[in-house]
Amino acid sequence: MSLPQEIDIAILGAGLAGLSITSWLDELAPADASLPRLLLLEAREEDTHDRTWCFWDQVAHPFKDAISHRWPSWQVGNAGEQVEYSDPNHPYAMLSADAMRRSAYSRIAKRNEFTLIRGIKVDAITPQSQSLRITTSQGHLNAKVVIDTRPPPLSALAQLQGVWQVFHGAVVYQPNHGYDLSKARLMDFQTGHNGIHFIYLLPLDENHLLVEWTCFDVDRHSEACKNLLTDKLPWMLASWLDEHLGKGWVVQRSEIGCLPMMPVTPPHLNSRYLSAGIRGGWMRPATGYMFASCQQALPI
Ligand SMILES: Cc1cc2nc3c(=O)[nH]c(=O)nc-3n(C[C@H](O)[C@H](O)[C@H](O)COP(=O)(O)OP(=O)(O)OC[C@H]3O[C@@H](n4cnc5c(N)ncnc54)[C@H](O)[C@@H]3O)c2cc1C
View 1 (cartoon, rainbow, N blue to C red):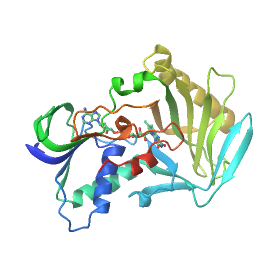
View 2 (cartoon, rainbow, N blue to C red):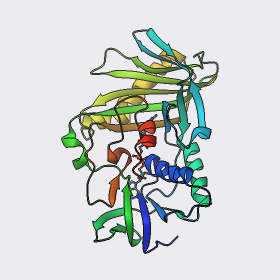
View 3 (cartoon, rainbow, N blue to C red):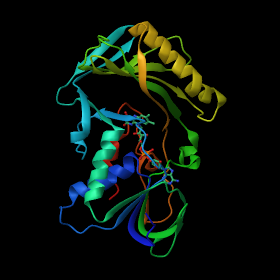
View 4 (spheres, helix red, strand yellow):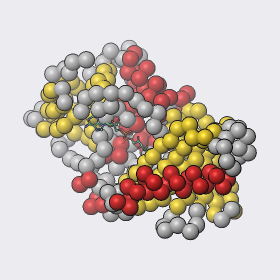
C-alpha cells in the first residue's frame, strides 16, 4: 500500500498502545460517524505470537471478548508457603496478543478512515508549522497529529534511575500437571539467587501452564543481563520445571522480556506530538503493569 501525502492522525507502531488507541476510537464513535483519517505505521511485516497480556480485569476496555482465561484467586509465596486472596469480582485475566490483534484488525478493516501499513519503519519526525513531517523507509508524509508508540529512546528513561524487569517464560505442556485452575501464582520467590527472583505460574488448562522466571537488573546492556536472557533464565526455568513438574514437560511457546521499571520522560516535539505506551510512561512496576494503564491513559 502506498503512503498518503497527508493524514489527520498518524500512529507510529501497531503494538499494544497503538492498537488500543485505534480500538478505543472505533469503540467510542458511532458506527456512522465520520472520523479523522488515521494511519498506523508498523515496522513488523508479520505478527508473532510473542506475548500475552495479563491484568486485573477491572477497567473498561474494548477487548473483553478476547480474554481467554480468568483466575478468581491469586497467590504470593515464599519457601513453599503460599498466601492466597480471592475476589471473583476482580479476576486476574489473560489476553493473548494474537486475539487482541485480531480484534483490533477487524475494527480497522470496518472503518474506511483507518489504515494500517506494515513493514514500514519510521525514521524521524520533524515539526512543521501546522503539521509534523514523518520520514519513513518508504518516503515522507505530513500528519496533523502524531501519536508515537515506538520504544522510548534510552535518553527518555529518566537518566536510567531504576531497574529492568527481565524474564523468560514458557507455555508448557505437561498432562495432568495438578495445579489448581482457579489460582494464579503471581510471585513465588526463589531463594539462593543474587537479588529478587520469582516464578510466575498461570494454569491454562489441565495440561498446560504459563510459567515465567523473573528477576531484575540495573543495566540491560551489560554482559550479565544479556547472559541472563540467553542462558541463565532458560536454564533456571528448566531446572524449576524438572523439580516441580517432573520429567516429560514440553515447551510449546516461549517469551522473553526486558522492561523498563523506571520513570520515562516522554520526548516532546510540540503540541501536535504525543507519546503513548511504554514511550509515554504508561508502564507501572507491578503485575498487570501495562495493559490496564494503557486502557486508561489514552491521549485522545
Ligand atoms: C513477553 C512480554 C510479556 C508481557 N506481558 C505483560 C503482561 O502480562 N501484562 C502487562 O500489563 N504488560 C506486559 N508486558 C509489557 C507491555 O504490556 C508490553 O511490552 C506492551 O506490548 C507495550 O506496549 P507498547 O505499545 O508500548 O509497545 P509495543 O507493543 O512493543 O508496540 C510498539 C510497536 O512499535 C513498532 N515499532 C518499533 N519501532 C518502529 C519504527 N521505527 N517504525 C514503526 N514501528 C515501529 C514495534 O514493531 C511494535 O509493534 C509484556 C511485555 C513482553 C515483552
